Length: 165
Image (tube, rainbow, N blue to C red; front, side, top):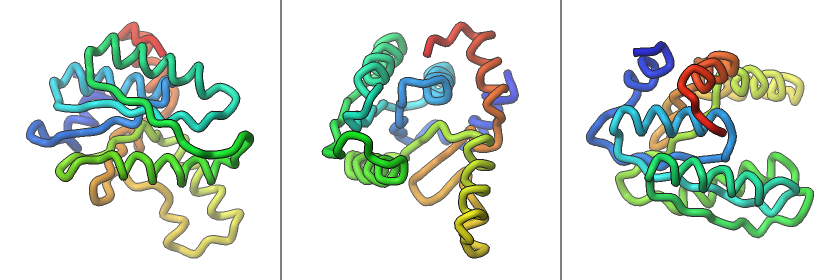
């Protein structure tokens, strides 16, 4: 078993129900593929923010879900064109959590590079110590199993395992 799969296996429970935030990109495609390989119970959600490449990403997310034969839903947000990354992130989490059923756990494809980026952004904003802790792997009903995995490792895993994204 690969290092990435082992990291995920340590954080998941076969008895849980998961909802994967599927972006249509590399990270969430690898994550969904691994959840599928591990026979975990999951479904996927794509949030379409009506931005420049949103429809292309939605098509990609739909193809990933279709290839994995998993339940999938697209949710369209009400954000205006050219919304900021902050507004999109806030809206995305609102919509994702609103869609969770009682015992489901939300899973995102955030990785180590995202963690470093968030730390630096918070540092430059003058955030206090709590804000500098950056992104955690587990938080209530939110799981980020790739948070301690480098983007390059995720990319290599996708190439070795023929994962389309």
